[in-house]
Length: 295
Image 1: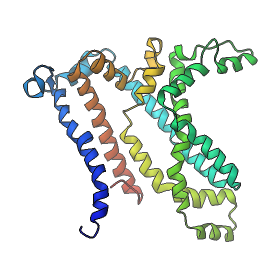
Image 2: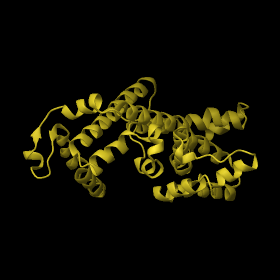
Image 3: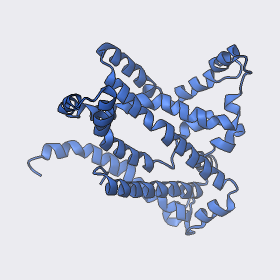
Image 4: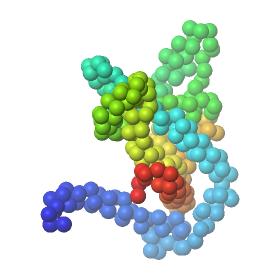
């Protein structure tokens, strides 16, 4: 330990950050089992056990709709957003013109640096029924303007599409780093065996990305029950609640707007428990069938 004391000192700010802002606040989850009162505090509030969990599942009319919307949004996000950075990284790797490669990579990274508010504003502007460019382009083909942000059936497409646009380019960085670590002699051996560019990509590049893909997939499952509620709050409205209202937005309304802290904490704890179970299960499965896993 003395030999690497400088490295341990460098770790200290990160450890303090997680202890102060991640682990210490976990003490607050105890209010999920209380009728929390700000005046009485955590130590003085009445303990009610699992009452708020039971109320959510059996006495909240929209409970199952919220769970369904949360699961569906995350399933679509996993199916359509997760593979895009992988495909982009493979395409970037195949570009031989360095100037063009740097340009397209920079363009793909740019949406990541825009705030969620700006992204939501761009989506609202582009999808406006009266002045949006999307409806303007549809008009060229004789299609009537569509109220994209007022129709529940369009919300999931808009949300997942905006997530892909905002995160795909930035998500390629880890995959490009994995590709850079592939042994160049493997490509030479593949060429000698007669492999063309596509076969080299499939049997060398893609295989070299597998460990990173597995780790990122498991980490993504940890946030499965969470969605980017900031973007949803900015994009949804009562007309699209049927498909847009998720657990996080419900927690926001009950916890912050209605000051029902105990009930909101119980719902948030339920989300966290599901995420933890998914990570443990997924990690156990990938550890059984591959050499890569989180632990």
